[in-house]
Length: 227
Image (cartoon, rainbow, N blue to C red; front, side, top):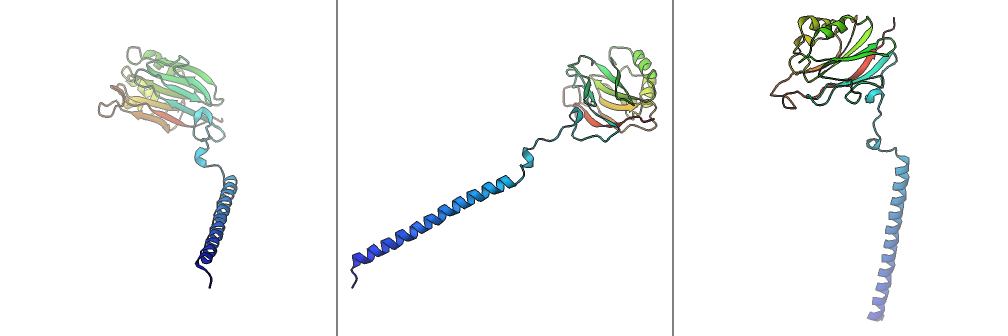
């Protein structure tokens, strides 16, 4: 008969052998999994979330088609931060350029070349509407007109000024009120109302700032004049 001690030794050896086999397989599985994960991670494309979104002219989120000018603009913020107008990757008006002011800020652009013709601002609270009317009357056909409000753009606007701006393609200027925020891109000689216009009323119920509505931002692609 086999002694009890011998049986225990055999059992211990078998257990040790099985444990060694188990550990070996476990180690092999870990290494295989690590190597496989390494191969997969190299083969897979970079996570889209880690890729920065493409930025186009003026920081736009899309590329404009050929024959169009990219623009991005923002109205003023209360009476503190002036408006910002960018066209074709060129900053035309901003507080940094020190060429904006209270009222209506205007940039005039050659509709064929995209070149800047002039910038100006007209105080519609404490100023006179006559210089604004004179400038708008003198705009040549084919000129792109970009306008942005800052603080108050409406108090001094009379019917003549509103009609002249409406003729540039604005649908909103006739109803523009005290401290409303407004941005607009139109043109001299335009035959239809412009699709590039935003407006937010000054209302105590919805204003983001005390006494002023929130900032408006707009971007788009303006077709260049081809004739």
